[in-house]
Image (cartoon, rainbow, N blue to C red; front, side):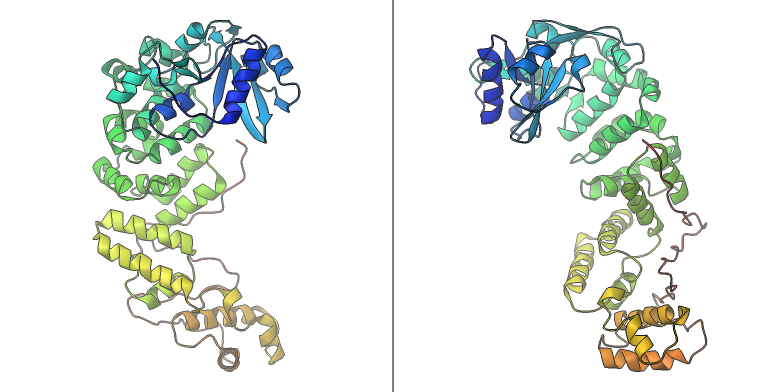
Length: 448
């Protein structure tokens, strides 16, 4: 097929370098697929008739990464960007359902394309020769069909992760699986248990972050439940509605998916997937907030910011609105209110308070736990607009508080949302989840 695309000068230079040494070279795989879809490729992979050592010789003047040499891949660093160049190859038998025991290097592009997973990934492109499309991947892209190269069952038995990759491509590109590929995906879903949890997590995150993953999650709910049996009792249509309603971002989508299960169960599931510690903490925190309504008044919003990070509160507003089917205008008002608070001089963080521990010591308050308690109480009072964040007024109030017995009384600016005292150690109190399911300990370190 004669098609012309604009590809980076560096990619053209790599192809020309290989050709000048007598080898073939093409851009291949995802970058070709993305160009056909009108997208800018994130990565540029190339395939070549040159053997790994021959690739190294061609690019001896560039830094090389040879970790993938066994499978024919050499990464060339050109202008600080890594380009993977892989020798044409065919795969041997797959013993573990993921990796071929051996690969055999060949000099034929046709043989190399035949081993690939889906037709949309089995295309190559050359700046002069154009598109090489032996399996009609361009037509499948146009018709929005995910189809395996060859027999789907054979492809999935070779590498079970291809099942999830197919679902992910369908979600990201708003496509559907052809009947044979779909049937094999359902049939061989149990083989996904052979795949490492890290690879499962990676594919699922990409799937959830698709513009609208709910069509695929609905059609292949059996695959999803097999991977995550914790979700079997979840009202799935309600979960899908939430997932669709929140922005296409991994943490938000996971939280929307897990919204109906206890946060401890969700946390254990995410730990099992070896997800990033920060993601687990954020998702768990969002689940702990699910019984907390969106503050309707600015004072309530400021008070909530005493115990909730602004970024977390922004996500909570989106999730709460999606779960409760709140009109968009109302959630927009809440987001606007939060934006205005964050831009205002009103204090809701200790570091922004006009006094600190040293100031309290200077006015004669004895060193000890009382200092922290007083500072947190002053912070609550400024957030609730009981006191302005002015040094002299805060110090006057600190003197009053210094003679009161501990614990200090709760600050209650509004009956609807009473403030709980913040402990002097700065720990955030647990959310009031009905079955105490959100009393979650720190996440242990683990190796992936």
